[in-house]
Length: 510
Ligand SMILES: [Zn+2]
Image (cartoon, rainbow, N blue to C red; front, side, top):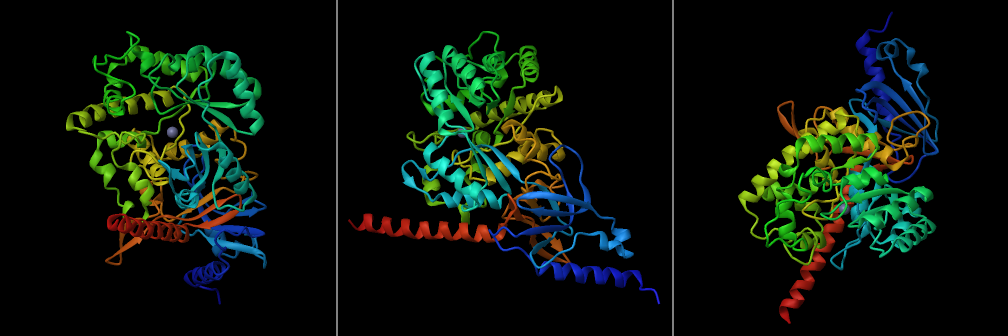
């Protein structure tokens, strides 16, 4: 008697259940890992495809076996990769597998304003949000180097770390060149510029190109703007300053006479008027030239969002369980803390900023249409943005800018890998690439919110269920279980809050 089709499906499911019993252990690299029956979204801007069985060994994607579900139902399953006693398996049926997300604008932070904050807090949220690599654009370099090594060895639960230290402010060309060589000798991956005069920038970039170091530039309102990045060969412009500035016909924004750049409230308020002052024709030339000279753009749309909607920024749902009290204190308006400038922030300020975003987003769209390379980073740890959650919000804002979700995912994976110069190793779900993969509960091409570790609500059989989230973040072949990491983060936060409460009680009694 032939087995009816529905019974063979049932047998198939039973096999899948048996496979689920060999689930990996959080944080332990198995000798061999098979991710079964996955729908794959690659990081190269192509649509979803699948199902695949993905075989991982020694931190590398060894095999991508395309499955034909119909053939499998008729006994064709023998072609699927087998599992031996050393194989861990993840059943990705109904789930989506993407390359691990790359955060191209991150800061390793184990303190805020001098108050300690355990580094594990940030690292674990990153992993739970599906982030398998970060470009650190300013931290304590010595510590960052140690964390980078520990992460590479697999002894620290962390994404891959690429270190771009802040360049500082050498006063002449010779000391700028010496500074580049000293950083290279320290073993950094690139350099972050923030505030620099043209002659120093020229020497610095020339030396960095000789040393093979990439350059990320946070352009301020200063002598240099995007034209200098275009001429000297900057790898990526961070945020957005410097691009509209390069398109202002009069060369300087129409600041009020009382404006003081070092007053952050002034600075952020008038930044909200910047895009409207850019001449559209000149802006087109700037974008064309960036494309021609391969200057990428990492816009960090998320980090300015408080300027267009302060209330949203201050009341994000994940603050309840996951906002560390050190970070919470840092976010409070305080002129001493960078980005904590919201004094008297008005509906008029928000309205200017909303227009600012509209022009900025359309410039981003134009830039990509012209062939420009857009990355994604969150700059979290400032201005009400939490680590990890900030990058996921960034992806939503890329969608709001008009990019399809396929392109949005490419921004955070394949494009970011290109910005790092690692496009042949990470950012793809492809045989021979590093096994940096995420297994997502839900379809991020339909709803990017399924990536949030706090999940999304859905209705199943008439009941409200919580679904979504990155279930497994596999970095270098090591599987990390998202919900377990978030439980640990919650404990870190609860403990810190309790300690903070005790300390406050003591000070009140004094
Ligand atoms: Zn930054």
